Image 1 (tube, rainbow, N blue to C red):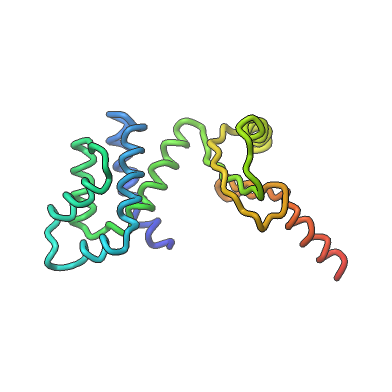
Image 2 (image 1 turned 90 degrees about the vertical axis):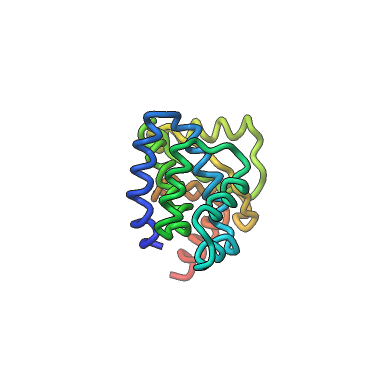
Length: 177
């Protein structure tokens, strides 16, 4: 996993530098679509085949992305395919988005909740979390019924766990100690 991140870093930085001269948001959507396509195991197997031509792989990926790609993005994709780095494309996309978010002073926050969160409640939670983490957050909610209740928030390498499950585990440790 660390190897893919190491491979992806220079690609993401180069892509971000070029995207700065164009439209970072549009390029972010394009790289996300391509990363989604690159996660397909059959596509990667086809791309790794010695019989597959890079232009064939490019055509398949462009069609599967289902959106027009900027000329610079097509050139970038050609290089990724030519260098056999298709497996690293999801990591490239993640690092590209991290660079874009850092430039805007925004961080991604994943909120794990046992139950769906209403939009009004989510706005309140995000406002409280932005104060707690001292930065603007872009929240994504993921349902995780095992939490029983409460939420667990992951922002970068920081975790805030207020779930019932974690409280019960802490009580168990305290009682058995």
